[in-house]
Structure formats: structure tokens, C-alpha cells
Amino acid sequence: MSKSSALQNSLVLAPLIGATQSWMTALGVWLMVIVVASAYGFAMAPLRPRLIPRAHLIASLVLAVTLTSCAETMAQAWSLQWHQHAGIYAGLIALQCVVLDHTGFFQQAWRDRLFLGGLFGALMLGLSVLREMLDYSGLHLAALVPGGFILLGLLIAAWQAWSRPAPKH
Amino acid sequence: MNRVSSVVIVALLAGLGVGATYLVQQGSASRIAEQQRENDSRHFLDLLPANSYDNHPLEHTLPLAVATLGDSTLQGGFLATRSGQPSAVLLRSQAVGYVGSIDLLIAIDVNGKLLGVKTLRQSETPGLGARIADWPNAWLTIFVGKSMNDPDDKRWALKKDQGQFDQVAGATITSRAVLNAIHDALRYFDEHRQQLLGENLHE
Figure (tube, one colour):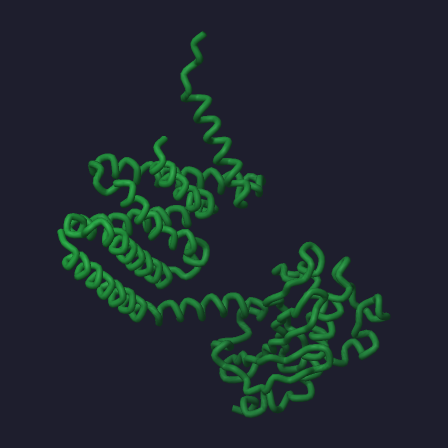
């Protein structure tokens, strides 16, 4: 794992744990990430070759913050209650856009970007459905943030145990 | 790619960004405020029986001055009406608990009987006094139907103070503060009934 992809992945951790208490929150945050990141990618594409490197970060920040705050305001108008649960994670999208741009995400082939976006959505929805089911069946720890961490840890451990090739001796 | 075009682009972006954010904010402010009102009324008014009012009580503020009542402070009030007739008064009261202040919403019907009490804000000990914030709340329902003189003054107290009311286990000071605030509010209602319902009574 390279340094930049580690940064990218650790930024995903906050919404992955914080915004997966219910599938509604998870779906909403994911949709917002997709919409804002796409708009950011479209707007940034024609600007990128016209900016000197030092102005690039400022332009990227201004654009990401504008798009995120517009999306946040619209989400509030759509459902204030949803926003009260997910707003703080939706606010992080601006940071994610800047970091994604910094790591060259928007210059990748559209197929790779689509795959990553889909993977993020599948993870968010999968984890939220799992947590809701566990909570519903009586394991209320799953609905709390520490429970989310434990569950994600168990899932990663299971994934690694399953996908690692058997050691050859 | 040069310095000037970069500066122009950043300045344009900033201007557009401020403009767009402002427009979106203006466009959705009224809808957000409306939802805030709906959320508030859902949160505030579920202590009134569903069919007991047909106005928007939170928009019908009573002209009360902040007043100190015994051990609590009256912070405001709302009037619920049904077909133009007053059906309940909601009083916002602040009591001093064990840890900090406790904000209560106290609903009283036109005959001075308690309809319900709800804790709006508190910072009591988690697991003990903080249980007054649970909703629905079994302990707070023991006061429903009581009025200023029923029971009489001496019995309007916790059992520990030779009264008739149970307390929240392990939270005597919190319980006493809430009980006194409710009694204060009922007394205030009885003393100011005309003023609270007055001009609305014979419409």
C-alpha cells in the first residue's frame, strides 16, 4: 500500500464507521460523495492544465468547499433529520475531494474510478445493513461506534484469512 | 500556464463559490426553518393528547416575563387551543438539579390539572438522575392529573420528605427539584389563570 492510498483509505474510515448506523444514512452519504466528487472532477478537469502548482491546491480547496456546502445545504432542505445524523460526515467530503485530487484519483481511467466508487458504496451499504441486522437481533453494541470498529476489524480479519494463500513450506 | 491566469481562475472560483453558496442558502432557508419548526413541535408537543389542540402552540407564545417561582424559574409559555378555545398551557421551567439546570416543559389543562411533563435538557448523573430525560417516562407520569391543591401542600413532596410521591432511585435531589418545579408551575397557573387564558376564554 503506497503512502497516498493509505491516506485515501484512512479518510474513508470516518464515514465507514460513523455513517453506517442505518442504511439510510449510509446511502445518503455515499450518494453525496458520488455527486460532489463527480461535480468536482468535471469542474476541475478544464482548470487543471491552466493552474500553476501552487494555485492548484487553493483552487481545489475552494471548489471542494463550495460544492460540499451547497450539497450540505440542499440535504438540510431535503431532510433536516437525516442531516442531523449524517451532516458531520457529509462535511468531510470536501477533504476527501482534495485528498483524492492530490493522489491523482481524477486522472485515473474512468473504469477504475467507477470501480472504487462502487466498492465504497458496497462497503457502506453492506456494513450498515449488517449493523442494523445485528442491532435488530439484540446485539445493540453493533449500533454504537465501538461496535462498528469491532465489526469492521472482524470483517477485515476474516477477509485476510480467506484471501491469503496457504503458506508454502 | 502562468501566474496571472492562475490568480484569475482562483479569484473567479472564489467569487462563484461565494455566490453559489449564498444562492443555495437563500433558496433553502425557508424550507429548513419550516422543518426545524416541525421537528420542534414533534419534540415539544408529544406530551399533549393528540386531539386536544388544533393550533400551532409553539407559534402562540404567551406574553410572560421571566419569573422566579420558589425553587424554579419560569422561562416562557405557550397556549394550545382547540376550536378557538384554550385547551392547555405549556410552561417552560428551569429547575436546579444535582449537577446543573434542568429544563422542563410542563403542560397544564384549563382546570389547573397537570397534563404531562417532559425534560427538554438536563445534565444529571448518567444512569441515576439523567433518567428523567427518558421518554416516555414512567416516573414523570405519577404527577399527571395532580393540581396545586391535590394533594395538599404537605403531601406535595417526596416520600422521603413525608410527602406522597416516589422518587427516581438514587436521585433524591434531582427528583425533588423536578417535583418542586412542577408544583411551582401549577401554583403559577392557578395564580395567573385569568392572565394566561384571559382574553382567549370567551371568544
